[in-house]
Length: 273
Image (cartoon, rainbow, N blue to C red; front, side, top):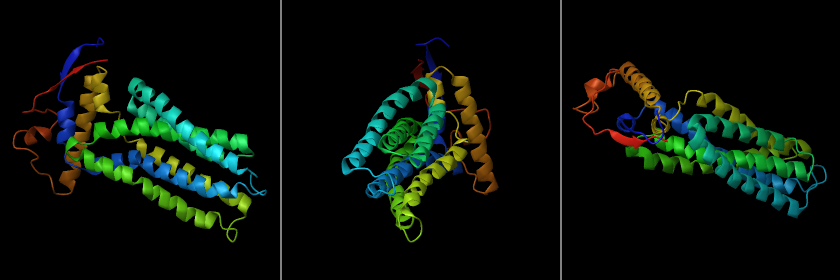
């Protein structure tokens, strides 16, 4: 399809009319985990900072601890700019795998830092992954979640930052306590928490499809329609198995339960890129 061509599509209406389901929970948990990871990283880095000034760890100065935190923030800004462009250019799904992989690599390497420069560099990589996550994930969530609940979902997901912060605080009570682990080892294990969570996130994101809205505006409407139909079919099957299948609207429910859909809503007109 040529760039700039105008198409009509029911994809946005179909996504917005879907009833809430376990598929939407999968999106919220696997994509929304970004905020938990950020809260975890900020809390861990803050707690570990004081430990890293000790001779048996990295022996950083207070200035170097502050500089490493700045590197994390700078990486987040650059990551948001770079990956933000990438998510519009190459698709949501490709980028939300790349960004979490960058985060995972950065936080894992932070655990193996040997001096200030290595630590600051690895923290910048971690920040780039988190910044890229925000750019890629915000778009994906808003495009996959029905409009009627989008505001509440965004509020809950953004609030999950504090879950990560609480997890980080609780973990440091054990990992940074010399009664349980030697000081030189505990802070390294602390950064391993984020890497472990990153692996779990990657595992669950395998079931998240490309955004049908992104496909639609890039002229790939047939792919978008196919993805939406597959999701609709899954939701119908789940609700039937739970014994709660119902008519979602008087005008379109019977069609919604089959691959051949009819709509009373007006299709969206989109100019492709």
